[in-house]
Image (tube, rainbow, N blue to C red):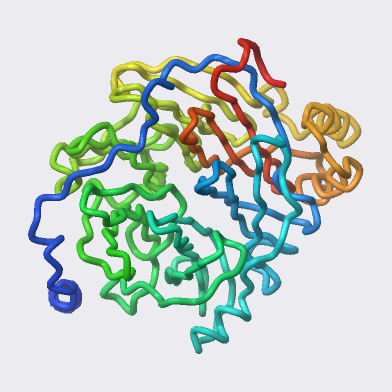
Length: 424
């Protein structure tokens, strides 16, 4: 009887949520994706250039994202502070100019206090942020905000910018869940529909763990939402759009009884329906994945490529929509030091080598101190490379941002048409 009551109340909440959705024509029309791949740039060879997007001005940085600006520059975002979930954590940003091949100075563009003041609610901590640039030049940023508890009690707040992300104004909190409107997070890039709406891949961590797509109009109203797969053990969906009706989602696996690989779900009708979760043939230690579609069926995916740890980061490639995969490139591979914690002197020497192979690192000694603080302990030190975010620019360049040992945001850049080679 008790279980029946729980299901009954839950059903009422869900029904009330759907009734509350606006009567927007977009919900009645058959949706169609707007593929974002860059034609003529699907067979990439070249030499990767490695830089730091962050300045090491804070002890910890994490969860970078980015968007291309109208003039071809990139604006990146990440959260930064003394520790994850700390009261000082804010959203930081920097701009990359590919013509000058340089990052601007890092700036704090959004604070917890700013959102609290403009929203009128207590904000305990901030997390992941994902940008959207509209066709009219307005930029939106969707930020994970927590008022109480942990990440499972988060909400998504939307901010808007009229100066391409230099300054921000709070807009509203998305009404994304019928249960107190909590436990909605974001991590991966948005997708676009032919009618101008935006698909925001989100995930939930309260009770069950699952992914969804929130379809938003330009006023940030949710005109539709669709569950990705039917399981309750997968989060952080990366949606790869192959055509107007075809898309595949790769999801981080949170199933304790079946770990070691990414989950997959497919849609053949513009995202209205998604297949049950199934194995993707990509090994992964339950960590975030990034990727991009170069042409229909031709995808690049960046992730930790072993089933246990986050001490490697590789790019995999498929030409047949994920039926078969090949290793394209390893940005890091420290599996030899996985069995035991690395002695600090040896570890810091290897970290120094990585810094030396990063172009224009402004303060190598400060960066090394940040890594020592974040990744070394009494028994030794650990490597960590995770949370990749991938974008192909309109000129064909491929950009990857990822968290480097919790201490810096590292940028891998493959200019289109560059000479064949390895890491720069």
